[in-house]
Length: 112
Image (spheres, rainbow, N blue to C red):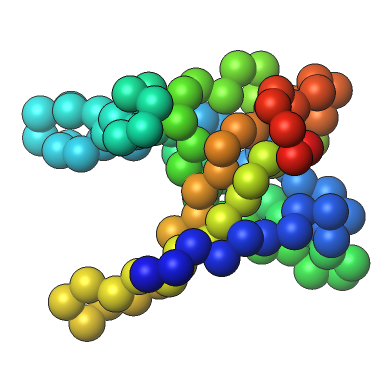
């Protein structure tokens, strides 16, 4: 499936709704998911994406622990993409970002 880039500048606000937690590969063993490119632990963060009078909460995966991200605080998201998926008749959209930081911090790297 193709990852579709999301223009985060179109949102009137992005707030952390659920604190970062490591994503698990296996719940029984507690094995955490590791990003193939960076080798960092993948974290899941619940973000409230607000646009005008509507808001949606989505779970976004990000490599490395998003330092300083707290529930209720505005955040910056770098390189947010949505990837549609289907597996055994189930389907959905997976969200992934290169980085999530508190709004007061400048995002690292280019393209911010």
